[in-house]
Figure (cartoon, rainbow, N blue to C red):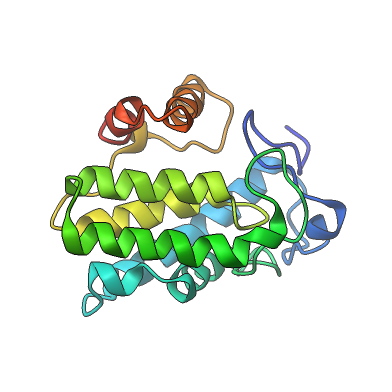
Length: 198
């Protein structure tokens, strides 16, 4: 059994005040937290996919991103759906988030409308930019992967496989994912595209 707040390699550690936002008092171990979050995320995924009337462009908004995060983690964390206010080991400075997120979505909507990249690459660029910004206290990787899946489905493609497993635990799969993200940081999207489609 692991400490409740111990993060996997490359995970975002929570600040003390964010840890206080745990809503489920029965959760005492990390595996219980992972299970509670995953159950919430499955509901959010179904909710996002039921929004069939929404186009790809409609989903690429700050309001939708916040709503999706709230639905993903809102039964577990009080801060779900709100931007982080503290510094992290990854991501931009917190005060830049409310400006950078809308600018990122402007870019993604442009890509959707003008198609300078193939659909898979548009979705992976969205994923990478969201992870790089790291707007929320936690759940950024899971949130950005679901956003990418919803986008690629709206663009007529299939949801990504993301290596075929859960990426919340320390594993060889998570290590491959983190390596692919770091290569994307260096402007090489090919490993992240390959990982997403594996």
